[in-house]
Length: 156
Image 1 (cartoon, rainbow, N blue to C red):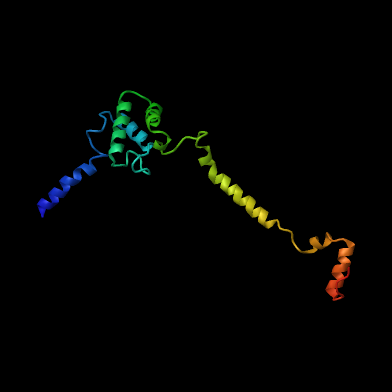
Image 2: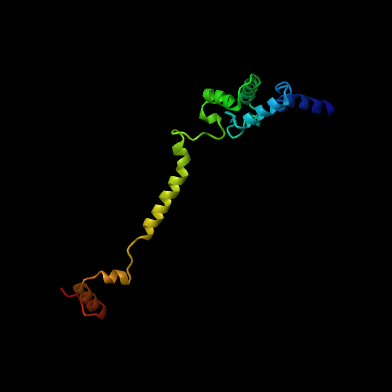
């Protein structure tokens, strides 16, 4: 039983070593924290809804290594994000920037809400059949309507 448990732990080691691997961490704690903050802004291209700091995918591990190399070489946070963004495109950013290319994506909820409100308003604007509609009748139409209501029959 102990041998099986030891074997399972040995096999599970690589799965748990991806994020917290001390060999990947920068020696300077301030730089390591900067690298982690930057990594939380970048999307894992395999997992898609996780940052590279939260993902165990091989590509995320490679991106973490690239971020740490850039941070240790003295680049600013914006330069590091720009470096990764230039190579992998907008999708790598967990919070994409507002550009002409992404404007439609950002505006779609507002446009849909406005279209729904206009359709709702247009549906409620149908003509009513109340006193306001009767006021729009001419004298001849009113006389004919009165004859119809009293049972006098249609008159030409």
